[in-house]
Image 1 (cartoon, rainbow, N blue to C red):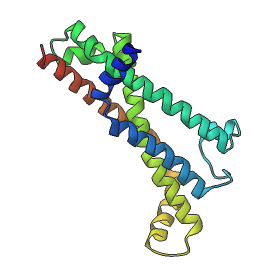
Image 2 (image 1 turned 45 degrees about the vertical axis):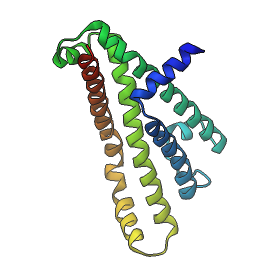
Image 3 (image 1 turned 135 degrees about the vertical axis):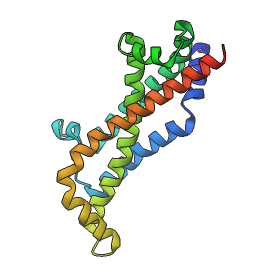
Image 4 (image 1 turned 120 degrees about the horizontal axis):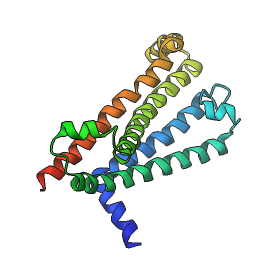
Amino acid sequence: MKRLTGVIRAGAKEAPAYLILLYFIFFVLDSYTTYLASPDLKLESNWIVRKYNLGWDGIIIKDVIIFTTVTAAVIITLNFLPGYLRYHNFTSYKKLIFNFFRNIKLFLSLIVLGTFYSHLINLAHIVVNNYMVQIFLHWQDGWMKDISEYYILRQKYFLFYIQYCLVVPGYIIAVIKIKSIWNKVVLTK
């Protein structure tokens, strides 16, 4: 038990509670805005929901599994990285970057953190998207209705690209986070 609390405490230094809380809030808002836009899930575009014909129970179970798995992986990764970087003693940030693709543990750390930050950004986008759909379908008029009409009518052209372009900033943030951890390790030597 002491080892587990050590992992949680160490991971919390690098993954502040507010970031995990924000991640959770975006999951809840995703489900809530999906419900507002499409209570019967006829308009749901999540391929997992469509392929496996998930109802609301299935969506909640899927979200809990994803949230728990990704959050645990991030905390474990952020606990692992400082010791790993200290042990391997990368003398420059350039050497660290080149080792991302040579060292499986470092590469997996980048994948976990990149996935977390990309998913966090994507969830924020999905919440806005769902809310725009809800306004488009249910509001009669107003300036938000005008914005939602503009957005929805052009959505087919850029939604796919926006979702996949959100992956890039997530990985940039992950690299910056790893550099921040590396800087802390280097400065404490």
